[in-house]
Structures are given as C-alpha cells and as structure tokens.
Length: 108
Image 1 (tube, rainbow, N blue to C red):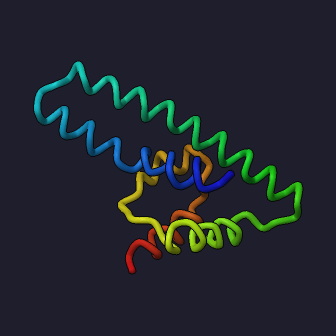
Image 2: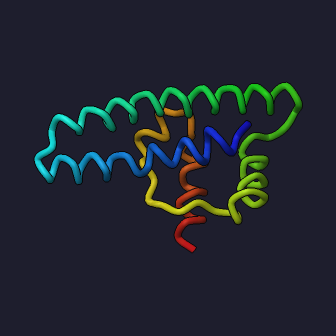
C-alpha cells in the first residue's frame, strides 16, 4: 500500500518539473501542458495513497513513519534517490520529518 503511491508515484512528483523545464527551454509550450496536468493529478494520487496508508497503519496500531522506513529497506534498498520535489510531496501528504529523512538517506 505504501511503496506504490509513496515511492513509485511520488517519484513522478520529483522528475516531472525537470521534464517541464526542458520542454519549456526547447520552446515547446504546448507540450508543457501535458506534464503539468500529470503533475497536478499525481499529487492527488500520492495524497490518496498517503491517506490510505496512514488509515491502515492507524487501524492496525502501526507507527507509519517507522513502517515506511522498514518498507524502504525491504523494497528500495533503504533509501530513495533525490532530488525531491518538496512542495509537491508536502501537498501529497508527506510531512517535513519524512522529507528530512528521505533527504538524509539520499545524501548517503
């Protein structure tokens, strides 16, 4: 429940601004609209996954931050590569402590 929205889909939040910048730099302003739409929609997808993940953890008495770190170790080698789109991840349900931990792990 957590790895797909909070790792895989959230990665889209991180990489899409770079694609938008490259397209804009090439002068392809019409195509820029597509990844901008995808980015907005992806924030909602990740937010939904974050809500359900926290709901599940609360229901089962699991501390969500610690469990997410465990899941990162189990499925992603313990860390994610940055850079992270902090603004989009905050909108999508990550909190500042989680983002600080992700950034610390990526700095290794």
